[in-house]
Length: 173
Image (cartoon, rainbow, N blue to C red; front, top):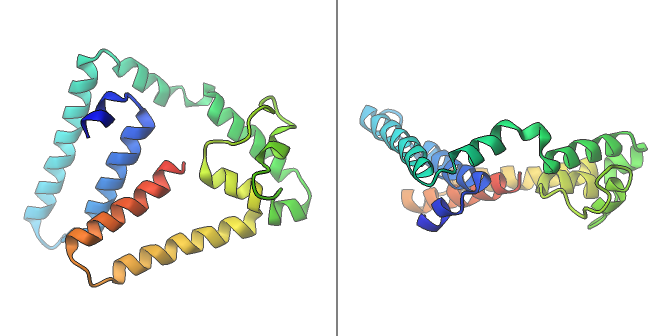
């Protein structure tokens, strides 16, 4: 946890705490007001802690700048332009993609042709496997979510499973 805080990675913060918060929500007993108060207090303390530690290291501007100027980030411009190329392709490519590890073929027609990946698992899957492949992967993730939900294991084990699943989904963005 401490190493994550010192990484000053906005995406690292978002994925770790987002997945933990979502896991807490899905194991929550919302019939108990005590649980809702505890969950709200933990989230509030986390926000205060995050702001205070970032302010001490004088890097809050860096983190907020990355989050507020997202439209100027090369990573997101790459995704935007490559998706434009992909959706302007023929129907077979849209349905089945360019093929595994062939993101570079879609990005060749953009200003970012040297990149071999978008650093976004879902965009990569869409471009490489097409709408059909991405749909199959998303169905698999949904099935995994349902299996965790229906599982009879302990609450702690469900929390860990949810946290790992949500972390995988969030870090893929």
